Image (cartoon, rainbow, N blue to C red; front, side, top):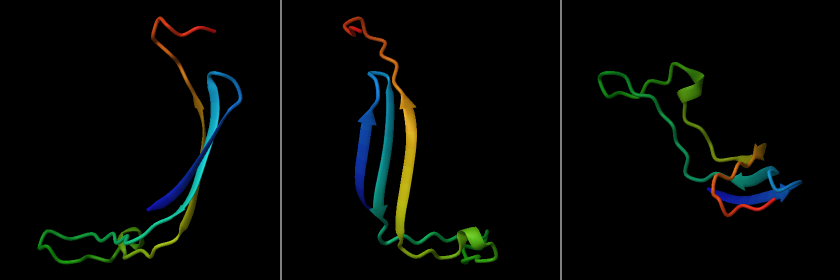
Length: 69
């Protein structure tokens, strides 16, 4: 996986973050109890590499005594 990660602090506690990237060498397969590949469900069929984007908001809480407002 290759990823660029970005973050921006609106305040000391509130941050937005995001990332864009490209996956590589991803193969997910489901196996049954006989150790044979089971592709009956779409979720577990072989996947291909692709671009992805993720984003979120985080609220930071500091618990140490040295934190000054």
